[in-house]
Image 1: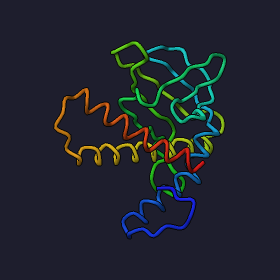
Image 2: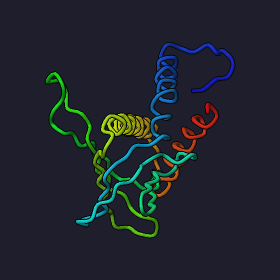
Image 3: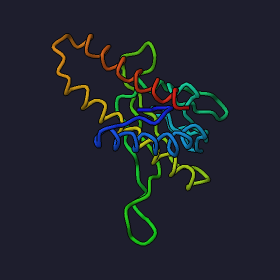
Length: 176
């Protein structure tokens, strides 16, 4: 919920707005700046060092290296954050990579994309943490969508979900 002028909100909406502001101020900037990863497409043995970043219109992940590759966010079916298993001080593990499953345009078969932190592990770890927040936000949106209890076909439900996500993106764009 983005407002230019001060607006009164209930406590629940105010909490949501604060979380959105934190996301816009911190994570979105990190995602747009990108991070460097060693990328493996599918079951290939060949890996390439690429910079991964969110596109300016927030619809794609751009992977740039010797080649260019794009993944449309709406076509990602699952995302798993990989950890290195060690951390300073014995706390929680640090994010070291990400495993995406997505369906390329024109295909119904899921593909796998593996990204592992390259040289600058701190920047890559921050980028992965921001992507984890995106994953969390999307799961919250999916839960909210299910609460609406649409009594329609799966195709119509997918269209409702698409419209719901576009609405969320428009809120982000208005803020930026």
